Image 1 (cartoon, each protein chain N blue to C red):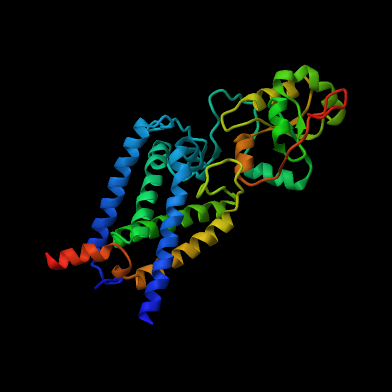
Image 2 (cartoon, each protein chain N blue to C red):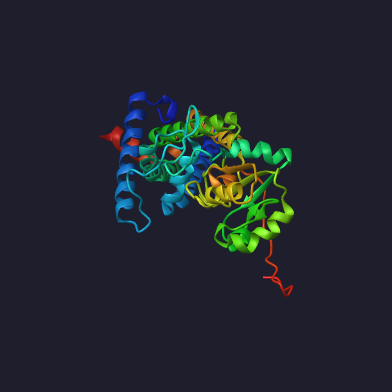
Length: 182
Length: 154
């Protein structure tokens, strides 16, 4: 009677529940005293429902969002310009493969080169760091209202979700005006 | 032959337990990162995400430890089997959705490679190992032999 399959189902269940409950209790106590501990209930916003993306409150009517799944399809069709709205340091560290840098906070310094590179009719997806980041949203609004770009979308979920979905990224070394690489 | 199967089951039991112990460590250290990964699975309601991120790694750790030691094998193997099935369903749903998720199995780092199919296949192997252990593992190869002996004597 020493094999597991010979045991009584009841014993198996009792043991499993006992282990799970004890481990959970230890986990909850450890979490309460750990400096890395998290709250029992997080503030996870409902990001998606059966109708698609649930827009956060700060979204406006004109904001057009694409999910990572939709962005993947557009990326693979190779017809979309991805625009990175984050700080240059973040961009150089890692960005969506082929993405153009246009930091929202240094907009004036970069928009000239951007205008030359990207036509007004181009299909554009702006993105920033994480799911609740908003730089990409503000950048998309600027590109529409100030520059007259007509096909501007914002990647919902940001670069983080793009990475987690296993999509292509690349690193780039910053080149300063004197030609020295960072 | 039965002895041979018994020792194969012992090896598989230790591998399975070690995999669960290893899998729990990064999640225990970084619960916030792990909660994010659970969120990206888009399966659990928001109010359950943090709770699951807190308790799951400790359940994995406990079940893994008991499996390696060969103590309370029935309970720990049931937990490991159930978790593997749950993980495979969660990954499977996301594969069907067309999302190649990072599984968050052994590391919660955002730089880890996303390979949903690879994870699914690996979990299938682990599940096969769990079934083998269920069929052939013997109390005599683990600490359960002392527990069961005491019980018999008592």
